[in-house]
Image (cartoon, rainbow, N blue to C red; front, side, top):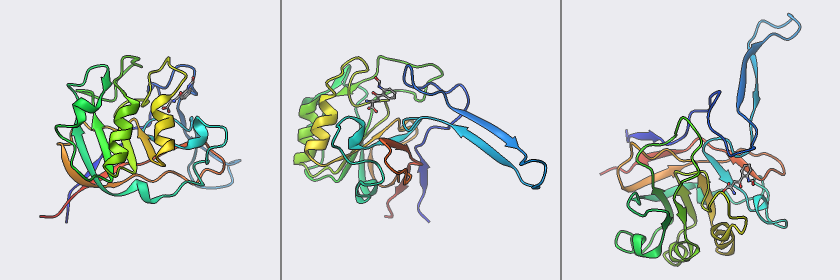
Length: 210
Ligand SMILES: N[C@@H](CC(=O)c1ccccc1NC=O)C(=O)O
């Protein structure tokens, strides 16, 4: 049986969220009028809480919602690349030495350790030219271990728009600390949230046999 790596953030009270976004809450158990002998709990969260998939409608008024996107980018062969040396932004020059000639899905590790106890704005971002390079090599999905492909304070969202231009999918907030660079199978499906701009995912990497 091939080994699974869970690359999802735990969703828990006090987890850091994007500044101004809805705090995560899980009210563990409330009993329905004392009638039903079951536990039922309530979640409060953002579509961008923890490890999540962005839909094009997050950043483009005419973009598809998360329940409308194709699911095949979220399932299948994937390469994990170590970009911890990239500094503030992953440029094509950081990718070129390690990027295979053909890729379908690419996950980039940039932090030494993630997730953090507190929000950090100093995350590594992705150059739009790097998105072009990944698309040229066949990528249908980019995943990062940061809250966004673009800088927190840059409303142009250049990397996001390049992703949409190439018809790629986005995963953000992955936990890649315990995963070695290399080839895996990715499983990370968004919920079927009607009309939503993003969705939390449970993201897994399966080691390839042999
Ligand atoms: N664009 C970011 C997220 C983002 O911008 C955001 C997420 C949650 C709440 C507010 C956000 N941006 C507000 O300016 C992303 O890559 O998902």
